[in-house]
Image (tube, rainbow, N blue to C red; front, side):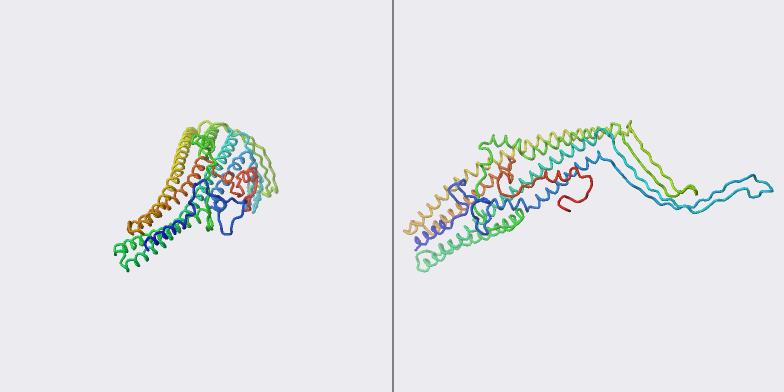
Length: 487
């Protein structure tokens, strides 16, 4: 009975299978949007990535931040445009004039005339000012704002990579934990059958109470592992919902993305040095800091402005006899700074130090990218080797379980030996599931470290968010407070 029970046990474990287990990670099929038919309720990896690209709040927040930076160009361009203001005022006052009309003598005791009354004046004015020259500050501010826009786009690209990598990781974690949960459930089912068989044999005197206790202990451990697997699965579902924005459907197997980056570490590093958004962001930050130096130096240049004004006044607050007055003027003004307390010189020195810092930040970014690519590449190579090792471990554990079961049937092995062999097979299959997950996630990590993890390269079939569209919508706007999306 023990032999037949253990053989059945091995068969159940072998049939249970694991979603991620296969002969090779490269052989795992993948379903793409628009290719083939996807069953209802099934969520392939590309679908999950597309949903994260559209729904993730972190990514949408960064898009809003990028749109806000676009407005810096319009703000800077405002320095080229005139400034016009209109003013009106109403004044009510009381006037009293005393006028002398002749010499004072005893014949003319009141030689003065009094003129008094309440008067009002309404003034309308319009003033326009145009900056003619301000030390090239407007042009440098515009170019600085454009550099900031380019940097914001690269920051957005970095956020896209982070979100897509998190989505791929969440997908594979949920897939792994679902497979491990199924494995632990099957293991508990087999251990329960083993305990029943062991108790039956104990009742007929074929085994001792020790054998029953060993089966009970192993079942309790299996149930504990099952509870842990259920907890991990619930956690992974919650993370999936947070990152991707929707509840998961039935997940399918996914393939690595090795084909999207170089075959060698040297090729991956060369690509990362030119494409990674951290490096390009640091380069644009250098440009912005260089323009800030020029803006600060502009404070030492003269400023030329042209101002035109027109004023019309109904009534007068100074003359009872004035009914209306009008005046217009055009003024050209040149201001030459001689000494302003020394603050402008400190600002220039400060901007130069910031420029030096940004250049060092670029070196730091390059070193960090190189380290990240090298580390990710090493993890990928280790994951590939781990798959081969765990596949061999599973095959050996299956053979060992079958052999121990047959030996136990003829009395050469104990129940504990069979339970140990069963546990070894469960552990080996769990290790294979984890290795398959690590293999896929490591490939996405390398692609992100290279700087090429994008919906265009992955081909996930989602409309691309193009920040250039918004930039051109707002760059040359002279008036208006509504955003292009109507807010």
